[in-house]
Amino acid sequence: MPAEQANAYRSSNENYPDKVALVNTLAVTDTSLATVARLAREAAMEGDGSTFWKLHSLHVEGSKVSDVGLNLLARAPLPVLSELSIAWASRVTDKGISSLVSWEPKPDKLTSLSLAGCTKITDAGLIDVVDAFPNLTALDLTACRNITDSGLSALAARGAVRLRRLVLRGCASVSDESVCNVIRAAGSLTKLDLHGCRKISDAVATALKSYTPRLGELVLDGCVRLTDATPAALAADCPRLTALDLSGLRHLTDAGLASLAGKTKALAQLSLRWCPGVTDDGLSALVRASPKLTSLHIPGCTRVGDATLCALGSAAPRLQHLDVQRCEGATDAGLAAVAAGCPDLASVSIAECQIGPEGLAALAREVSKLRSLTIVGCTAATDDAVVALVAASPGLVELDVSKCPALTDEVVDAVAGSCHLLERLRLADCFVTDTPLADLARSCTALRTLDLSRTAITGDGLLALAGHPALAELLITGCDLLDPDEPKAKLISESPIDGFCVLGP
Image (tube, rainbow, N blue to C red; front, side, top):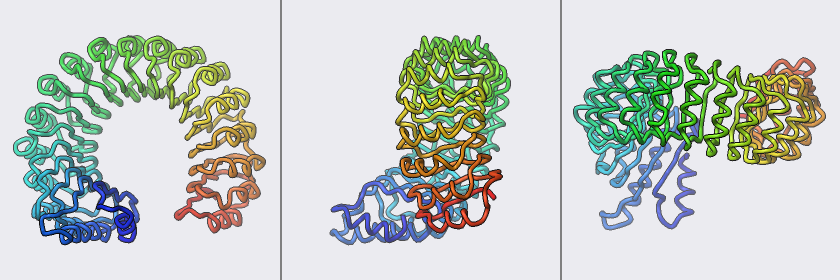
């Protein structure tokens, strides 16, 4: 939120807001933080010296924020601040973090801190954070790739006792010893995210089993050294686990999943992306023992198919999100079983599966709450089947039918007639012409992304999109009938969207 926007927000409220989010990555700068500091000082001056801006949550996301901005923020009297996020500020260094140590008056109630994407921060900066804010219960260090075992060890020794939520996504330098030390010191973690921490081993799961009986969310995506011993350890003493991500574990097999079956009955979200050792035998058993399952993501599990889908249909009535991309055994019969047993489905990806008209018809017949549908590469899909599904899904926000060569303008007409909330539409490699684009532009006014790559459109079709009130990204790569110059220039000149992007010739 730039300075003028902050002032407008302030003047429109009788009191200062208790939450502020400055999340426009390009517009948020050090000046934005200067505005926050100024408003905080003004609030303090309005009273008798004991009155402060009761700001509880400040979220700053901007690649232009630097150490200067943090230094200015440290001059803001915000004594009740409890949540602070300085996200994707790649210019921030340890020097900026150190300025927060001298914050006056210090926000002693700060319990949640995110430095996600602050890629220049090192162990020294983390140690300053630990010393400055000893009451942290949530810490996010996503993509802080310079954090090592030294920094985590300091966290374990001096500041982990109250931690409940810890995110170390992309901190690839940390290893078993420091992670286990933090787990032991914290004692009651409810969330741990170790995505991409490639050095850790099954020893971490053993520590989790012993010290985190309240663990609810665990992300081990890309921790490639892990084996079946990890789910076995989790099954032993993590009864509250509701979300588990074991994606990319090439050593995971059905034996590991079998150890979880019946031991994690609270499980609601399961991700096993690209786990080549998982088959229907292990996964269907786990599904049948997980009646609270709402989300299953298994793209790239090529040995999984209809047996798992049928298990979902019979045992997971709460399922809302399903991704079975490249599950080679998934067919119309399996999709029909899921549709019949899971009426609350909101997002479905069956990309590159052997799904045809019968499976899509079952989805249209049984499910009416779809918001996201991906059928990329389902070459057997027909106009009639997709039109019926679109008509039955007026709440669609995202539709991707790319690489379905049998689909034509009829699908676009159906979208224009039914899906007025649509924000993202991908039609690459479909036989789409100019004819339906004017109706699409008039009817789908929320559309932000449109992919027409390798379709049969011409400049006339593109001109029908000129001036669309929301379109921010248009992909037209490989459109052989398109004049690459004049239509693009007119589209850009007439677009009301700053930064409107046309990708193509």
